[in-house]
Image (tube, rainbow, N blue to C red):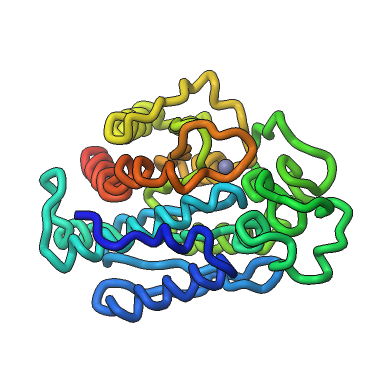
Length: 310
Ligand SMILES: [Zn+2]
């Protein structure tokens, strides 16, 4: 039951504004089960919105587009929310899970667009960013399709403190890999830090775009629990599970979350490898099909694994 898709917003201008308007519309039209609120603002002052769905005590975060060129995931998250609303309205069951019953057990928090400034730069071009940033040394050139960072040139998924740092860090602001002047230096990552400290999520999903792979490991104590969950999501999506020996990057949201909360956390890379550029809209149908049920199955697994350990 996939209803309307938001893919038409992928090439719309200004992207972040249209996404935030779509989120407000969606919540206004479904007030009985959805609410949205601002968790922070980007460097340029664009509101970063969260959408809350359900009222259960098990709390799940789903977030996307830490990396600017991976904004296809913002569309995916809007479609996932809309799909769950449809399931709720139709009292539907998927994989034996009744969605109304699930939403009594689970509270989902979606943050569809973590890096609004970066997404606007990539999808809409330099004229859609503030004048004061257009002249920055690191923002010279015509096309920014390859850009991953925020508008300060900080790679948001390298801005989290972890005991094992990433091995691919850059020394100065640029398109990717620069961890920032200090951890949580950026308003986008600081907003996620506060949100996470507030909710103390039982599990999280970080959506990225490259390689049809799932990362799940970061030296956690409860490795077997998290491997079972990751394997189930790999089976559902058909994506490859990255062996723990190859999970070498640090300083990402997932790494920080696992280290601090010791709860299941996945990074899901949704598209076949496309090189250093945006995911073409043609790839989206397949991405949506593979991921539409991921939040539901992930949340259900997290819930029952916790019950088993009670
Ligand atoms: Zn990424």
